[in-house]
Length: 357
Image (cartoon, rainbow, N blue to C red; front, side, top):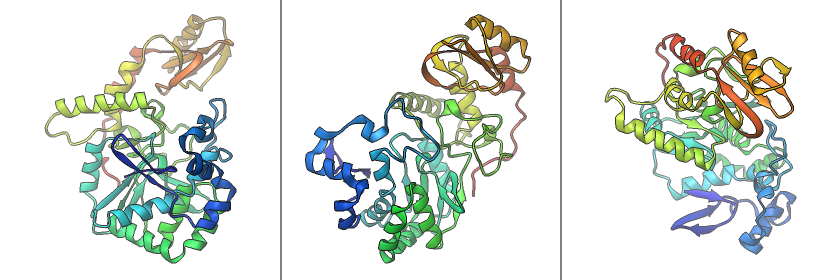
């Protein structure tokens, strides 16, 4: 099932309206639904990119773009979406919810689901907290077993008005959904670092990158990988091609990809000595220098440095833990491949890291 805020058919696929289950009084009069009403009445002619994802110059915080019209609608979608999903398909063992900029390694996900008991209530994803509410991060994707989905749908039906009032005062629909799972009696299973909130080029393969996580002692490097977030259409195609090649050539006894495999086979080959209009997210020691070559020399001089970036205003930054980063105008990045290859070779052997149960 594909959900949006506009019901339509696209290339033989039916797009479900994620919001048509919200109470009519809210839909017709709430300010959050201004864009929805406009789309309903005038269709695609009124679409504006900034209304959906925000201006390219807008700063994105961890709490999202809460003033953006598309973001205002987003929080209202989660519970009506899971409710409609269950009523359309009440007999499935598992329900997997992903966003448009998520990437799922489906072969690995099926291996994960195979070790879980679908007859038990499971609500599984990458852990997030807002206050004391624990929930699965929507962008990383999350999995729900049939008993768990039935429980939360019954909770929604019995307390819809209260839930909508709670949603009105909140900003994150995935958090609202998580709270309803808790109130329905469904325990959460944390699947981090198997399910990631960033794309491979921003994953911290060696050390935590400063973002709040549940257990910084977990070695991302060694765990299976199932999902990524903030993935562009081009990157989705690139990852798909990589995954299909891996499936065609993997050893028979290898059942899934680990993060170390993604780093060695997908990330490392993309780390060149010099890449223009690219920011590799170097965020360590910073200095004002006269050229890219001087910045490289600074990295070479620092024995633990493995990568560096140089911006048009002369800022040179270096970093120890290797990252790929993302396309960024006005920034030039480089990697010391020999050091990164040694980093990959010197990583301690993995133990029994496996699926999060």
